[in-house]
Amino acid sequence: MNKKRFPVFISLEEKPILVVGGGNIAARRVRSILGFGPRVTVWAPELSSELQRLLSEGRITWWRGAYCTGGIDGFFLILAATGDEKVNEAVYWEAKKKHIPVNVASDQSLCDFFFPALVETEKLVIGLAGDGSDHRLVKETAAALREHMKPIRVGSRESRLAVIQSEMVVEYLKKELPGRPVELLTMKTMGDRILDRRLDQIGGKGLFVKELDQALLDGRSDLSVHSLKDMPMEVPEELPLLGFSRREDPRDVLVLPINQTEWDRTLPVGCSSRRRMVQLSKLYPDVTFCNIRGNVLTRIKKLDTGEYGALVLAAAGLKRLGLSERISRYFSVEEMIPAAGQGILAIQGRKGEDYSYLNGFFDPEASFAARAERSFVRTLDGGCSSPIAAHAEIKNGMLRLRGLYYSEERDDFVIGEISGEPEACEILGEKLALQLKKQLL
Image (tube, helix red, strand yellow):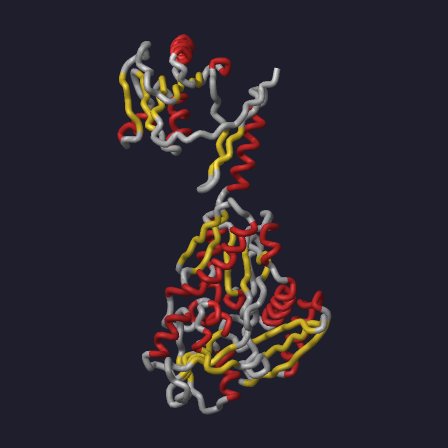
């Protein structure tokens, strides 16, 4: 005999449903249907603690007393869920006479409909039902589906630029995984809170990622989106970098106060990057600098109120913020070598988990460039405020890496470059770093 059940999805919105029984089984039945908007009446002498709570919240109605015939008229569905088989059977036969669909929790043969194992998201409901012979199969299949359908939580700093960059990943995931929820989890990092000192004075780039790392470790997020240039050179083994986005414009740019076309060099340049200071001083020996911290919009606001004559910022951030019109001058990558990873987004996750759904977001050329640049800086032990710069690009199938190394002891810097196969990116980065370091010994 075929025991397969045909799935039918019906609306329970505002439908009157009677549940006979007030124990734990009845509570499970009520719990499974309440989210679908019915008007539930529970008929029982006593209520379990869960049903008492639902009653106090106004989510169910209670008919206090034992079941007796003659009280089921007008209900859309009947659920018999008492611990007394005779009572359940009596409910069944009365419902049949009244032509009201009924489900008896204790006896599948006395059921007009069945409760499936449910897998729910905001926009999707999946119901699973077996033939009654293998409850474990249904349970395990439902668990696997819930795991597959659970929200992907994307961790991000809460600045406007960080959110825009993280939303790029969110939009990709929504297209790649239609129907699966994707949530953005934003947080303020220690690096965002402490704005009156340079990063090298308060702990370096790690202050921009600690809170995001902890959210990953705690399971509050599933992946983090970072500007690669803000990432420490060493990342925890349990939280690897999964891959890198296509690169936005890597150049540094000059930003003048709003509505100004001439650079007033009597005022300082707002800049907290020694890498930029070293290179800009070579181009413009007369400029002075004043430390500036905060997100891009905060810096521009300070510029426009007259605190600075100009800012040096990353073109990528301004373009992603829709502020390209504020750029007064682009510095070529030869004039001012960018920070390692500038213009690239890095995605970080947990070791051992499956992130194959991100493969289409990652860019192979950006990956080679990122690995070469980070290898160069890592070999020189360069932190966030060290005047070290690196930029790699692939042309005609070859990777060209250009780097800058500054010696604190010599108060001087040297620039060099190297080319090779993209697959040798990290070796090239290390080799160039050692060559430049040797030149300043």
